[in-house]
Amino acid sequence: MNVIVIPDGAMIIVPLIEKNGHNYLSPTNFSKYDNELNLNPDFNVSLSSETPSGVRGRISLLMPLLDKADAAIILGQRPPKYTPMYDVLNELILFCGNGCNNAHSLAASIVNQMDIPVLKLAYPTTREDIIDLIDRVNLFLKDFDTSISDDINTDLKKPSPKIPFSDFKKILNKSI
Image (cartoon, rainbow, N blue to C red):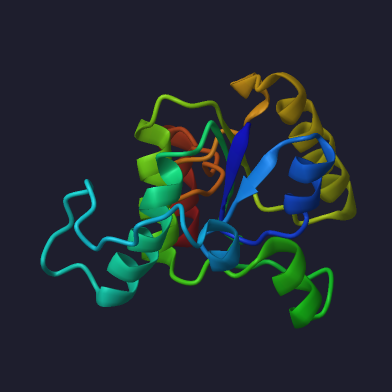
C-alpha cells in the first residue's frame, strides 16, 4: 500500500513504513516519480487567491501523491512550551519541520477528507511517547486500524482539558 506522511520526511515514521512492506510516498523524492507525476498547479483543492504562495507550492507538490495514497500518517504539531529531547538537527531529522503551519494544517485537513485510513499522532514529548508512537505506527501498518489514533484537534494538537465554568469563576475571584 502507498502511505503518505504529514509532515513529509518524519524519519521516525518513514523506515517503519518500508519495514512493514509498504511504499512511502514523498513529494520531495522527484527521482522516484519522474515519469509518473504531472506537477500541475491547477489542483482540485480550492484555495483562496490570498493563500500564500508557499502554501500553494507545498500543496501542489502533495496533491498528485494524494491521488496515489492508500493510507496516511499525520504527526501533530510540536507543543508551544516543548523542551526538546535532542539537539535541533536530531529533532528535525526525527520529526521533520512542518515547513509552514498553514501548509501542515491544510495538508492534514485534505487527508482527513479523503476516504483512506488515517493515523493521527500527537507530537512525542518524552521517550515513552516515542516508543508508543513507534508501536502504534507498526500496529497501524499491519491492519490500518484507525482506532489507535490520538484525539488531535483541527490545529493538530491534543485538546487542552476544559475546566467547568464554576471552577473558572473561583479562580478568577481568587486572583482579584
